[in-house]
Image (cartoon, rainbow over all chains, first blue to last red; front, side, top):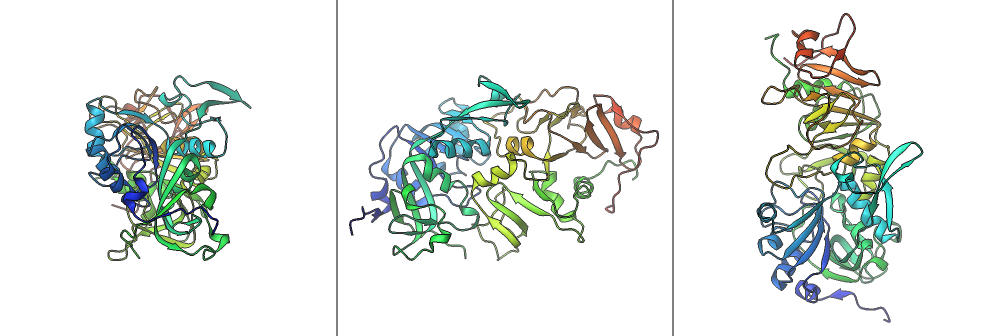
Length: 226
Length: 225
């Protein structure tokens, strides 16, 4: 085995080296596909002053909520913080958190661009709205577009159903959502999975995230809803 | 009862009549979320959800929920035969890329040019949230807005210029309310139908921009009473 070992023994070991001030992408949408075990691990680990990129900002203490409750987050890029994001909303109203609100598909595309080596791109979304304010605008073939910047991060915390030891990933149903995109857009991707199988056991035709995008794998059984 | 405005269910029922057989459709929050129940049984409509589902079926029955299969409102749903899962970026390739035939969203204000405001009421507390509405509004081949015709304070929601933060400009094709069906055209707003018991003049009185209409305006059909 010359392969660099990516499988990490515990959740706490998987997040032990996250420094204060790190920027972290978190997968998940609508309760599905959140790396809840890694989030809980990060809450125990206690890194602070974090910059977070996530579709939403938790539900009560659930999902990202615990990190807001612990005041570990300084800034957020999100599409829909959410009415249930109690601790985020309190800190936002108190002016303690910086929020960049981004249309959901543009949040995806900015990350995808970063992962693909595209520094910026023209987009029709937000033209003539407050999202377009202050951004370079250009007319292309008779239509108005705004320039959107690629979005990367130090880490991605994601969740998948199954990994092999190389880090090839398969997701389950709508729990896929942002996870594969974030894996491409971060310098270092940590995935929690329901099951780790031997390399070669995943059908190569069905792999969604190839191993090149995954740096650390940790088994986190979590709750299964089958 | 002929003077009662339509219910939210009746607005949804009327909006469902705008869906031809075989279309790919995204439904937003609020009244649009009620529409799937009124799609006629003799046509097939394929519902898209921006978290990566095409061919989304009805809500899961109690006891059969799978929380890895939820819609954009976190509600456990089902997948119909022929359905597919994909990532959020592919979901928005479909929205922004113009691949969805019809999208139906809720609205706070619509202007006579078809500008839509639907994500934030000025002066409210909190951060607000855009979600997928901007991508959907920009990319939909046809965008229908369903909403009450007037705000809680009685003021028109169909206005000359939106005063609320915009979702997208010049994007709305048709507005379906509890009083009327209105098309946004290059010549301005055209009153296509009125709710039972109401006259075009009464609809005009609660609509800020000028409504054009034929001498006789048909009544909005409804089986729900």
